[in-house]
Image (tube, rainbow, N blue to C red):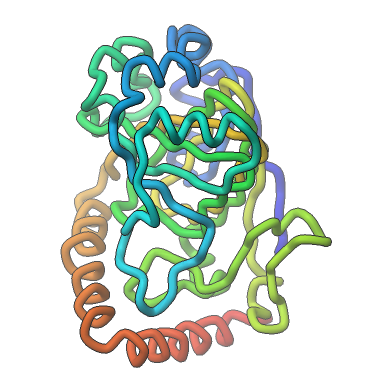
Amino acid sequence: MNLQNVPVVTSISAAEFKEKYYDAQKPVVIRDLSKDWRALNKWNWDYFKSIVGDKQVGIYNNVKSDAYTPINKADDYTSFGEYIDMIKSGPAAWRIFLFNIFSHAPQLTKDFTWPDHLMKGFVKRVPMLFVGGQGSITHMHFDIDLSHILHTQFVGRKRVLLFPYEEQHKLYRKPFEVLSLADFSNYWDPERSKINYEEFPALKDANGYEIILEHGDTLFMPGGYWHHMEYLESGFAMSLRALQPKLTDKLKGVWNIVGMRNIDTVFKKTAPQWWYEYKKEKLFQAADRKIV
């Protein structure tokens, strides 16, 4: 893989953000975007446990999906308080994603400010919390609705690997899915990396970015960007989503949700192994055409 560091700025004007990153569809980390948010120092494990500790949450392990894996089905369930206790006590490869903590505690929305000066189209009904224990992994994927994301890290450090949408075939995208067949776990550690370049040779030519997010960092991920995240420490982050400005891009996101995903679900239920092998054949053919 050909990786470069995500650019990091302390602060940025709306005009510079639009020109260099939003319009150019390039990622950037903004260090001071959240500096005036009450959430920056107010939100912590004990505070969350006190207000939503009794809420049931689905938790996910590090096992990659296979032919029979339902879309977004949790691997186990527990209370948020019990989950916090588990990941605070040491390495625990369990994570929570798309947790709408704000529906349970709407007062939290007063602790941050929507950065409307940077871009429009924020879906303000659904800010989302992403939580993971040390060692947990969010496998390589892109967000199905193709929204732009501002992802702010509050607790813990997290390593992020990013690729533009156009690199999808080099990443061995599964047809009718938003996931890569390849396993990028511990890609940064030669002794533990699970990347198999013999099985997935096109990965060598993939061009992407990497960054380690720390307390207060906000990562801008343009719509459709592939991302793989590894929790170096137990922590949590919040994603603010903004819809694509162009109607054609909005429609692509709608198709992914109501068309592509439903087709995949039907075949996973009716002919899972045939469907899995069919998609593998197609994705390897697409990747082979990208090998230099």
